[in-house]
Length: 220
Image 1 (cartoon, rainbow, N blue to C red):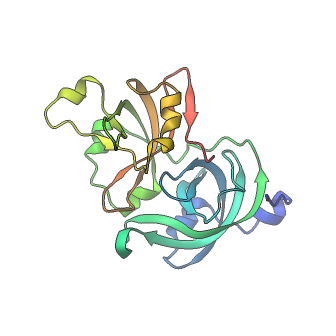
Image 2 (image 1 turned 90 degrees about the vertical axis):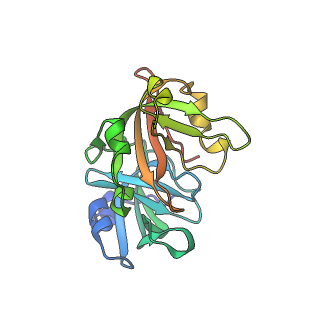
Image 3 (image 1 turned 90 degrees about the horizontal axis):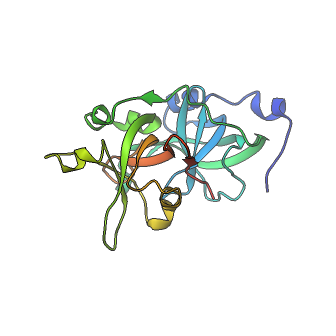
């Protein structure tokens, strides 16, 4: 159940997202921000404020909705496959309070970048606490393990050495919101996080827009 309390009671001691990201690994942090999107293939959400965006991993997402302004506690951590430290996250999170609802997440910390430049970026763990805004073409692969890939454009797909950014997902249900919006085969404005839970850098979309319709990666 949601814990609704006065804003001043819950938020006065909460840190900004950037302060939580900058905290030493293992530090217990309390952070305030807006729930913006689900972390695909993980039990978590992105919490965003004017200063940044960060993955917050929970055992239970039942009390969280897109647009909730929340205060959460957890451990500043770096997670990854087989103990590798490849993804910045606030781990073992608990919901302290919902201090607002139906809020629009801030895009002030987002980095606008050309898709080609994004793909030429030499990603490090620091990039897993950043959101990028770019123009991309949405392509769905075929077969049993079909997934969504982003390319610079439809034409660029046929170019030799064309680079793509695949969604980190565990099944079609996790990217169904993109298909339902009719965005497969379209050029869109993409807001995406870069994630690395298993040794490779992939996309966790925050939102996509074709100029008319905008869809946000739903928590539920």
